[in-house]
Length: 182
Image (cartoon, rainbow, N blue to C red):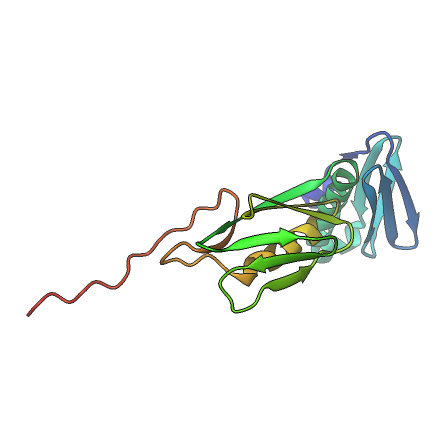
């Protein structure tokens, strides 16, 4: 049995959980999120404690999904009570970002600005034209959007220019050395 799958998740006040079929819906002050519970994994709620129980017959086959389901549920509960935030930085002369109601606009050295549609339920803030903060309730969708923004201009390992996560260290490689006279 998975150790992570055995974990008990504490449900904070103000969060309601409903199960219809195999879809588990969690409602909280910051939003509503849903996830599907795999077959042969049972959801149990005792007061303010939630736990997922794996059918022992399918222990070997579904052990990984047991832990994943429990961890994903804990993330959803945390997401509807607090918000997750990812911070990105743009490094490079003339590189900048701006945001309007529905689009994030990146000017990162291409001949045209790159428009990225902001997914529903996420909030994007740009400060100092180079610092981007993306926040939202769903950690998986948030991480995917942040990665898609980073993919527009991945940090260059020779000059260090590009979009990187805040605090990310980019190892700068040395350039080609001139041939010594022979």
